[in-house]
Length: 201
Ligand code: FES
Ligand code: FES
Image (tube, rainbow, N blue to C red; front, side, top):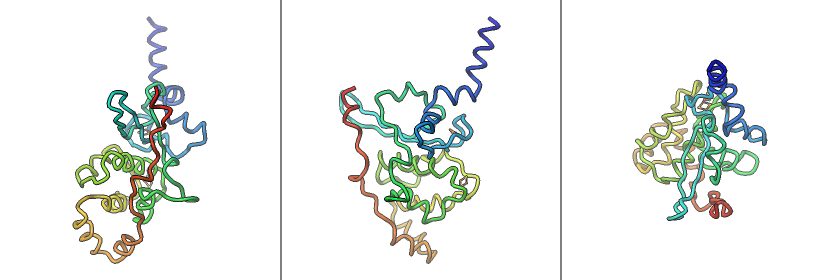
């Protein structure tokens, strides 16, 4: 019994948990360092990635954001995992989700940024025209200690359906207005497809 208790507490130790069974440490080992292992407990969203899964019956593909620090490796068998590296980069082409957080100064130290990017990206893959409420809900699990959230929210509000309200807010600020007309549009047809080889699983 004593051995069992010691072993269980060992399993629950966050170091052990984070480094042996979950997605984010494995991403690091293959050189994908965008998703960050920070709290390791599902509390900060720095490790957010998008998981895509295909329903074998309806062939409907569902996309959702997960905390990869809490996602067991075995749970993503047959699913696609996309990190911020998979949607764009500063060398070839920034994705509109990455570009808007940059242009609205929504990143300072940048530690939380890949998590915000992937929460927003996952929302847009399921719902290309979210409203303000859906936007706020998508970021419930993401924390930022630097920006005060204003730049992040202002940047991502530009994806909302209430474009009139967004424009009204933007026109309060000449700089934001200027930035708005320089932004790349979202083009859902250019997004990565669900890997066909996973459809057969
Ligand atoms: Fe904080 Fe995963 S590292 S939620
Ligand atoms: Fe530093 Fe968000 S930019 S934590």
